[in-house]
Image (cartoon, rainbow, N blue to C red; front, side, top):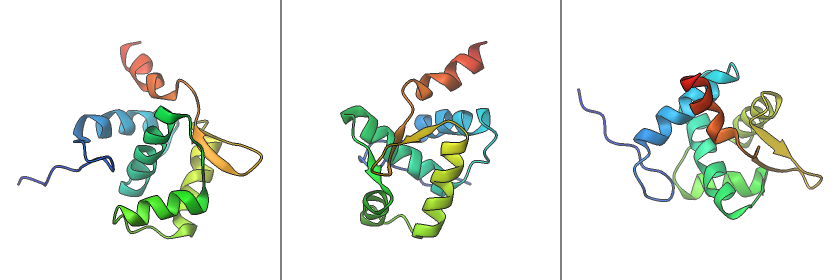
Length: 111
């Protein structure tokens, strides 16, 4: 059964990105879920510009992209990603990917 191809929030195909995101989540002991994949997608887009997002800003982006996620679910997912070392949180409580985390899964896969 063919499933529709997921799109990145930017509109680009995310099939290969999702495999990478799944490896990243697995590397820190987190289960893969649709909300976590979408959160990582937003964080990846922001990392390209060096941007960090607050919970409210991230929730607004996800909502604008028709991703049904509550602020509570988002908060819990971000906390677990922070505890796993995938994201950092600054003094303004804005979240961003830890530098180099995207390469982490590739290194573990190769090594």
